[in-house]
Length: 337
Image (cartoon, rainbow, N blue to C red; front, side, top):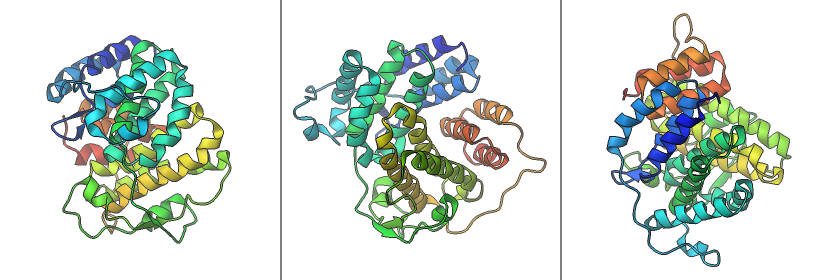
């Protein structure tokens, strides 16, 4: 991250007066988008972008009763406790090293990775990336607390899933994901129809293999977006950004947590694919290519849509020509801000 950390801190402070959701259950993408903009060299756009975006946001909900260490399970998955959970983690990261807090809570929260349409884990991934690469200032520690609190409040495991036959690689496994039958409902109703997923990430693996397979999954999901995004251009972004959030978090976690992190990331990516991807691909190509990662990300920043920015950020991490083509397709399919 370049010497623009003051911009990020200012933006996060503005955003922490708002809640993690607005207009019902829409997720506040502001912290994720501004972190991506700063990371991608687009810090001068941040406050102007935020001036426009925050008009839609709601204030932070009022707290109720504090979450207690001896009774946290009763508050897990209770969205009425959003502010209580955020305050709990604000205290935790103020009193203990943030890595210790993350290592304690990651395995507790991981079974609910699909909660909030995967937005909580994505928000945590952006927060961890910043903390790993820059000084852990108060706004950046608070952002981790907001992400973890959002995840805890919306925690909701996927249904019990049958392990279907595996596949030799991530791309083939995504192709083999069965599609749900009824696509008339929202994300919770769609995820509730899941019965089984290919067992590509199942079985014991060592931490390094888990990391490598997770990177493979992110690449496959980004590439696949170019040919399948027409199913739902916004929701299918998360098939790539959710596992990438986990990949970004791995360096901050004990290595023994990496294999379970791979399994959860695969379940989240496959669930989004099952719920929103079309059955058949739609070949897509850009004459002459999409351009360099820097050029594509700059176009995403100018486009302004929060999902387009986040997807371009993940495509930037992958860095292949196919990833840049996928990011360009997002800019064409997702409505500009």
